[in-house]
Length: 125
Image 1 (tube, one colour):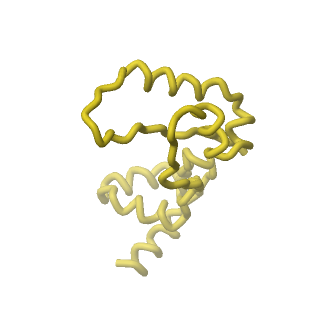
Image 2 (image 1 turned 30 degrees about the vertical axis):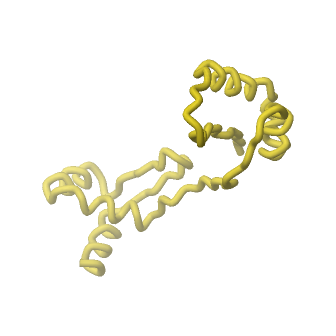
């Protein structure tokens, strides 16, 4: 399993109209690159921000832990085949009685048989 870490940083508009140096924001973003990948995964966002920007007033607005998973399934494969025209479907199953669909997210292979597809059409249309 792969692990990724990152943190979007955004300076909120100030209440005053004092303009700050745009280079400052780039420099602070570059500071984040000082952390090794392992540190970014182990350290909390708050700890990372405090250690990098100790002279600034920081506030974490929200923390989200995204979850990535494959939502593809045999059912979705069958529904996806509905998008093909009748001629396309006939030509696909002309070469054999099954087709193979591969999920590019999880690399799962789905073998769909022509009879299975026809039964699915009959039951769901």
